[in-house]
Length: 278
Image (tube, rainbow, N blue to C red; front, top):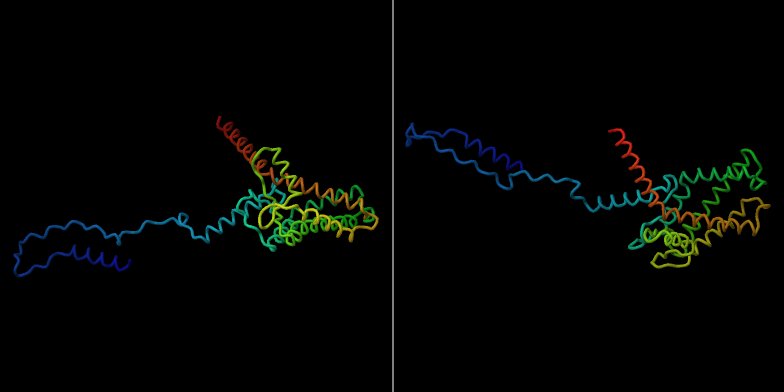
């Protein structure tokens, strides 16, 4: 490009210089007619500027796609509850490795929201004097907080990491996202009974049952002996299954609730703007 510019500058300088008189030509000779300006060669014309956003490398496209996926995964339900294990639709979903199963599950188990909600649960248990052997005061609250947090970590890791790895199932929730409300409601509840295999297809949700049962068995180690037993274990198991089913309902319908809230907020802003302009 630099060579082309220098050549063009030299040509222009030669064209603008006055002709040197020779002995054969008379002094009064008319100057040569001005030559029409020559158009630049295609190679000399500046190339059209290309917007970097118009042409993106495959790496940039993959990065942006991953960011969009991560953003979707981090779309917290009601803006606070973690939602890392939800997938929209079932078609053409790549299975995740055992490392990803543990990583996603641990990310949800140690999310800041979990620390806060466990504190609330521990406070309710303290107020109801659940597990009297723990006592009251700061010491009793600390014991209730520790056991409650251990319960949710054990349950999440067993249901979402350990058993899905052993049985090669996918711990994520695959939203139906279509059909009627009743159908979607029933589908969400049924996911505690049915899960997806890594190879595709469905199977009985053994990780849900075995994982929660294992977590309750582990909890008997750190709960007071007076609060152990078949009855309390069965009650805890049924409660956890109900919580998981309710969680599936939130995962299924949260995008609809979120969209409704956004539309309502937009209408509120529009009305406020119209009122301000009147």
